[in-house]
Image (cartoon, rainbow, N blue to C red; front, top):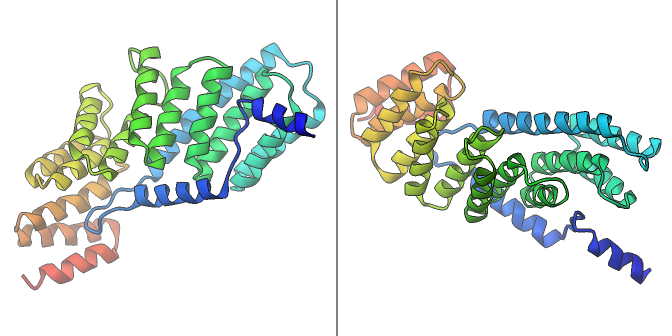
Length: 304
């Protein structure tokens, strides 16, 4: 029994969870997702993009598995992987992680099958909100597969979501060394996540630099401009924030225009231009529907 335990410890791709670590991760997640009352920033589109990049990596892994095959994989193990995928699709990420862990325990050496399972486990951990575990899984993939830029970028996103901006930046730098042209999937998402982590840490200057770099490198989007806008607002530079908002509105991408519209009204309110702010909040509700936060601001502004 003791030898079995030691063997399990030597398997570098096995992640051991402890309740206190999970609770700490939950605290980090809550802190990262905290948004000031007067500023709105939706992350649903961002997470969808991350999932798309994970799905692309999994598709490639699946193709490699079909080409290379794997003699030691039993039909039972293949069924277990399919069950894990089904659990993910049904939103049972914790059950999926448990299924993938069980499959990893059954393998005796690293293979294309196990690499495929690790990728699915990383996605399940990320969607579960167990960002530290997801980062560990992507670090493991770097070791047992290849130092692919995608793994570094997904690890960076995971660490950024856990609140570890420094760790995220290190992974991002490792990714860019393998991807000098920043063409690999996940680069822009890793940069966005790192900017958000620095915002949460109170370093608006670094966040500002990251969003500026994204725009200069051709990764403009309404989400990037909205985050850049928020960085300027946190610095108290509302004129600059409005410029970023206008640039975001000029894009054909509509995903974060609702958030930009809200933030524009907030900027004018902070600038003391109450009539303009009231006009924009009313316009916001006409376009996007009644909003509790907007109602609160309108109630305040009509008294000014």
